[in-house]
Length: 428
Ligand SMILES: N=CN[C@@H](CCC(=O)O)C(=O)O
Ligand SMILES: [Zn+2]
Image 1 (cartoon, rainbow, N blue to C red):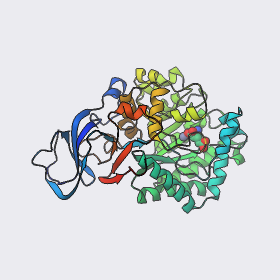
Image 2 (cartoon, protein in one colour):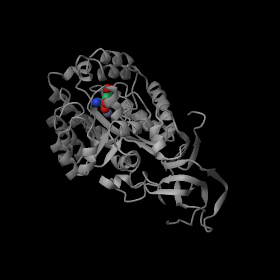
Image 3 (tube, helix red, strand yellow):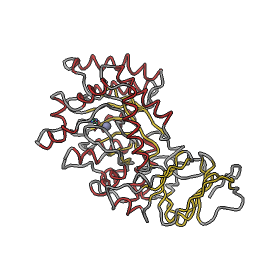
Image 4 (cartoon, protein in one colour):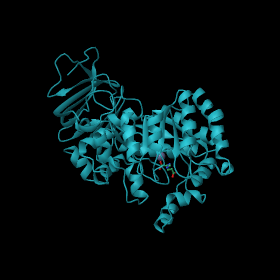
């Protein structure tokens, strides 16, 4: 192991029964690489403030000095992983949509509800009404919950203002403020094209034009987002409209994501490949041709199995086929008030096994290094290696298989974010 000897250790985690390092290249892992998790038995890891300075097994080398006030954690019987990364969320929104669940149970589909003016439009109304402070407090509560599940970095989208640009900006400002005050790092995504505003129903191209000429230039100038995203779906934004929006964002220096083929096979996967999107998300209906193109163009597939579950769809994304084709996979909660009202990434990992038939090592890869790649943060996070951020989760489980198997509960014992220690035993 490489050692950085200039810094004193301020945190040492020792006797780690299973240390999952995810060491390896800082790029998306695919095929068999997705099963290489860099497991160290009886591991030890040291950090100096917010950076990792040693990763190995047994004892620390003699030449690493331990600071007098260093925190020493004994992780005998525990499993340590890189801090988990939730790379697709709609964290900031007003209200909730519990009534919609029961409409779905009566047989209404997600798109039926949306097209009859409910769904996303309902959350748009609640988000418009909510003050900055109210949105901040609500999102902060969710972020605390995410941290408690071992999550240390979260992507967050706007998208509940639509043509009301001030509401979209309010959400992006909430994300910015949370990033400042909360230990979890947030990555902002501009999702102005989340649904067609009622006012532009008969002239969607007019709204696309506003996105391209007004909203995207403003967001990029003010540095309010790192990514741009579009809900490319039948009855929402077409492939052509999505292409226009994403191309304009790319020209302005934003990285691209796309909600692609969530329900219908529209050609979103093909578009992601054509435009060089960093990730294409959902993909339940993606065509085989689209998947092949994604593999050829190194587009990450962000899969959201709790959404498919909550929408009661029988068909899940074809994760095994994607892995076989060489598409790197990330797994995420898609936390949102309509189709995935959960902050629990550990639950998503269980669904990765039960519904996507991924093995435990592939699942860990999908919520660490591949999720880091989906946020273009692979140089800083996603694996436990010298010089990377001291972001880690200590789970009270004997192995990663157990973490996935004993489901619906929180296994986190401690979260380390930027070298700071957060005890989670009281919240689990
Ligand atoms: N599909 C579009 N957007 C979200 C759902 C948002 C909502 O229903 O509020 C998703 O990723 O599932
Ligand atoms: Zn989404």
